[in-house]
Image 1 (cartoon, rainbow, N blue to C red):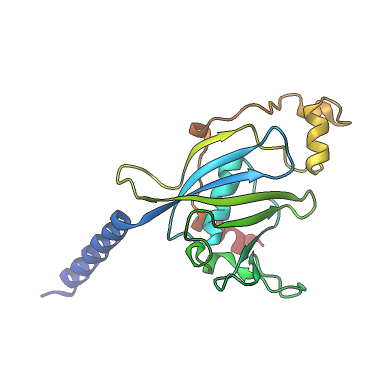
Image 2 (image 1 turned 90 degrees about the horizontal axis):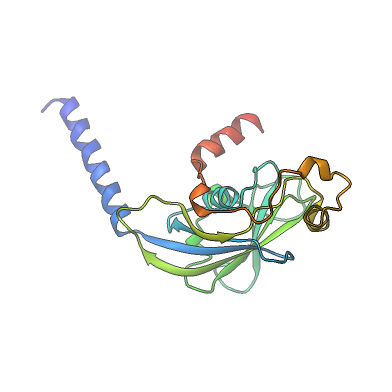
Length: 209
């Protein structure tokens, strides 16, 4: 048998195994809610159980409407359920230990309904989110994941000054109100969400950061 046929057979077998894994893989349904804002801003997303925290971070960014232009960090109970751990982008000069999100699986820390994590985006504006695992579902063979299945209200504008700046914009009282004249806080529909490939975003980050 030629080496080309061997390689082709091996490639076909790998593809078959990947399809089988996807067919049997479960799906995590999370509710992501921005904290400290009323009326509430939230999204319900479904992601493969094989997701890393980096993958989940990208899905949250895309579903919420953030631009992923600032640092982020998850805070979650460790597998031993005794102490909190931090997951995101490690800083060798930082004062706390942070696991790399791209090499840490979500299912190690959240695997049953009710498990949750805190997700912080933009350490300056301080956007805090609660990420709660609501359901563990069988994978729909006809669906594409990740997907956003529900949500309410538009994400605040980037770099608007955190919750207080956002509230001023909604009230029409921001000193920079002209910059936000097209912002509609009520505008959101799940079908408008477009998810980027987290692998591509990670490659971009490694190239430019």
